[in-house]
Length: 169
Image (tube, rainbow, N blue to C red; front, side):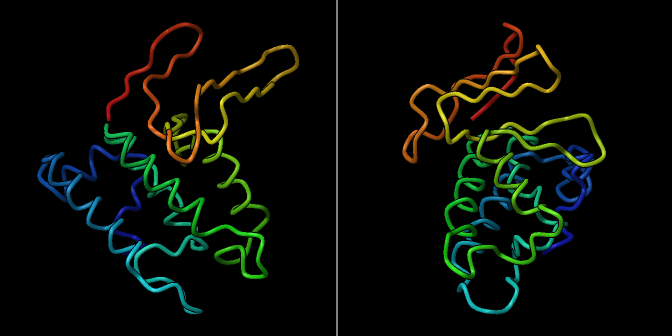
C-alpha cells in the first residue's frame, strides 16, 4: 500500500494505469483506502496502509485534490492532522527527519501541499481563517478561509491574484 499511490508528479497517468482512466473508480478506491487507514488499530508497529512517518506516503492525503475531488483531500488531511499529531510523548508518527513531519503539518494546516518533482501545489483544507506568507520581501501571499474550523473544512473556492482556480468537491 505504501508505494501504490507513489506517483505524485503524474496523478493522471496513475489513474490511467491503475483504473483505465476511470476517475470514479479511482475515487472509490481512494475513499476505501482511507476508510481502511482509519479502521486500522493504532499500535506500536508501523501502519499497514498509511504510516505517516514514511515519506513515500506523505502526499497521499492530497491525491483527492490533485485528481479533482478536494473534499477527499479535506477529509484525509484533516484526519491525519487530528490523529497523527499530538503533544503526547508519541505525538509524531515516526522520526521528524530534518523537520519533514513538522513541515507536512505546517503545509496541511495552511491548506497547501507542494507536490514533489513539480511546481504544483495541491489544495487542501486550511485550519485558519487567514494566513499571510511573505515568500520574498514585500510580496505577501494571503490565504483566506472564512469560517475555517473543525466543522467547516471544505473550501468553496480558491483564487490567486484575483483569478479563480479550478476546484471541485
